[in-house]
View 1 (cartoon, rainbow, N blue to C red):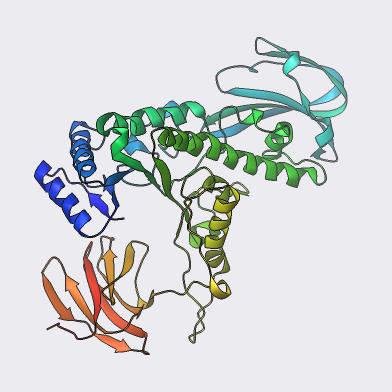
View 2: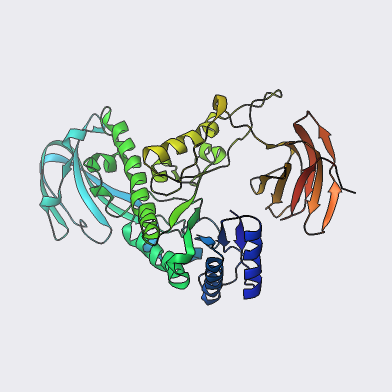
Amino acid sequence: MPLLWLHGESDSTLKDQIDKIIAGGNGSFVIESRLHPDWLGEKWFADCKVIGDYAHSKGIKSWIFDEKWWPSFVANGRVPEDLRPKKLHCSAVDQTGPAECITSGNSGYNYIRTIAGKIIDGEIDATSLTDLASFISQGKLVWKVPEGSWKIMTFSWEFEGSTKQVDLASQESANWFINNVVKPHYDAMGEENINGFFFDEPQWMGDWGIGMENDTPRWKEMMVSQFFRLNGESQAKAVYTFWETLIERIGRVGFGTYRDYVNSGGGKLTGHFIEEDAWHNNGAGHTLRYGNGGVLNLMELEKYTNMPAMDLIGMYERMDDRGVKKNWSTYQLPKLISSVAITNNVPDHLAVILRNSMITSDFEVTSGEFGNWTHYNHRVRMGIDVFMIWNGSFEAKEFTARFTAKGIPEIWNPTTKTISLATFTRISDNLVDVNMNLSREESVLVVFNPNSRGN
């Protein structure tokens, strides 16, 4: 399914591009916004209308990429500040009983709950946690503290502050995204012209959603565990409950709302989350990971899409005669995604069968700099292996790539309209190393012809 990159072209050019997509044997395509000068503006929707109507007349449907650039759910910086991610906050006072505790500030838009817990040997007894809601009137708490040492904890939320993304864990924010990003496409193009929506590597930097305390009966324990230690095994259970409750809420509220709206228009929701070993290992906030002791389970989100997918940008190396070490999490993820799809009765999944728990790569870099922004795509046409190699970075890249292919490698350059014989070393009948040198943002085709035509 190709990407139709829009730059603000004329109607005739857009129609010509669709004709070429159809001529290439494609049944659908993705409308790509990243280079368009007026995303979500009048010109953007006018172009989408032309594309939708013409594609429909040709019997082909389009998918919509839902963001100006990357990651999804930022709406190109248009998300109102009060609809951005939130994080849990706690203020606490210690009180020795018996005594009377009187505090204020137990109300307001961002107020959640006030909880009391008995302190025993420096930890809070989970069985003693008490919801003090019935002792609060007009924001004022009046509570007779029982005998012993107690901690009175007031919970609220505050804005996370580092991201402009939609708060996927709060319903009002999810509704804003639907009404301001998704719905306008249906208004402009019509349901009959949209096959679905595609999201790209969403991030999450918050740790709270409005109403999250209502999602689990263990809400007191999970909230307290983020700031204080509970006694015994209660702490580990509460921390697990917190992160599982959060990711389920992101799935149900954020992606579930999105999926249900698209489904109501006859379309499907797909896209990919990102699994990156390097970023996970250093505790970065990218890819729905939170650095405060919890990792969000991405598999909980897959069930809220129609076509589960994962973008693997981890260590792709396979074990070979050079002793390259396998990364087991990378190889297991496709099986997990497929299992999630089957378990949740998602019909449009890709069942990946892995022999000996390994993914056999048809392309890998053996030396030089490749980088996360250099990508490849492999197709076979009339028995000939064709690889598209794209340097998406702003710097030139020089590297040696190992291809699994037969034939003589040629470099087809669409910019210069030249075909040249590649510099290569044949490793075996099926493996060949090719020297690659790409300028910034350059793409070429590496075509393995039985008989080379290169100069």
